[in-house]
Every structure is written in structure tokens, then in C-alpha cells.
Length: 155
Image (cartoon, rainbow, N blue to C red; front, side, top):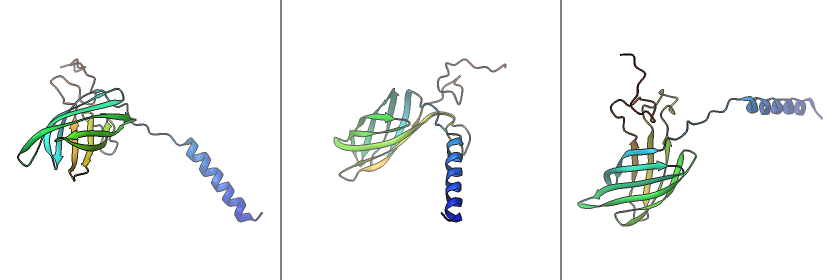
């Protein structure tokens, strides 16, 4: 065995050990709750997305041109991603996206509220996005979507 192979094997072993020892970054637990959403793209409107356990349910009122209708889906959640099918204006759509907990955005600091973002598409060419947050309410502790109104402020 040549000295080059020995060096390559040692480098490979060192990289394998380094990657095993590297800290793992995990996303914060995705929050169950009701997200106020906006629908944009081919369809426009607003509604709610409710995350409970491993399911996201979406119900929104939407419009396209001068026609009004509904946008609904029950989607499966895996980790912080969701996907599945639903209906919009009576047509089948495919939806996929993700849920981000408050505190997930390491590039910009903590998110103030948990958010939902996703895309939808139909075979007939309707395409667009869904986005929303768990609304902050009076007395709500930003960065803690489970706050019950009690604050630790000493004011």
C-alpha cells in the first residue's frame, strides 16, 4: 500500500470522527395552534390553518377573478414539514410547506411567533403561496406561543 493511500485513509477516518462529534442542530418543536393565513397567487384570500398533532387543517375563503370559493385541506405533518391534497374553488390541489416555531430563524434571531409557509398547485395551472402566523395577542409573550397572558415583567 502506498503512502498516499495511508494518508487518504487517515483523512477519511478523521473526517468520519469529526462529523460524528459535530453538534446536531435540531428545529424547535412545532407549535400546535391556530395560524391566521393569507392565500396569494392565482387565488387570493384569507383563513386559518390549525395544527394539531401530526395534522394541519386549512380552511380559507378565496377568490379568482370575480369568482369566490373555498380553499380547504387536511395535510399530514412529518417533522416540521406538511404535504397532501385539498380543494380550491372545487378543483383538486397539491399543497406542501413547513411550520417554523418561534426561535427557529438562526440568521435573524428568534421569530416573534410561530409561522406556516407553503405552496399550492393544481393541474389546471393555479399556483401560489400560503403564509401565516399564530397571532400575537394582548399580553402575549413574543417568542412563546404558549403564553397565557401572564408576564414576568416587573413594571
